[in-house]
Amino acid sequence: MSETGISTSFSSMTQKMKPKISEARHINASLVEMAIKLGGTCTGEHGVGLGKKAYLQSEHGSALGIMARIKKAIDPDNIMNPGKIFAL
Image 1 (cartoon, one colour):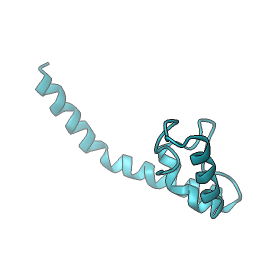
Image 2: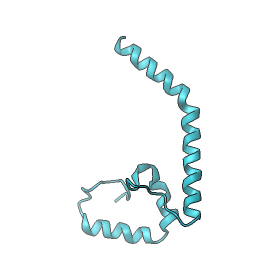
Image 3: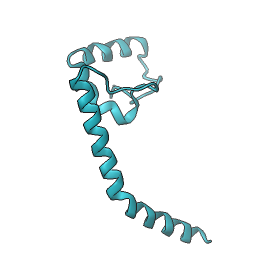
């Protein structure tokens, strides 16, 4: 199959998956919000990740600012995982 054929096929598959991807994101958001409400965490065994970054303020409140200041003190040049948890 030509490069164009692969691209077209992938694009078609992606379009068909959009409703399922949207549904999965909604389910994930519901689960994370429930976990936080019950005193749990939005993170997992692999850390925060970009997918959970949006929930950190809800989970940690004002402590998030303290965490950002600690990160900046330890990593002033923001070379360790830039943008993963904080937009410094």
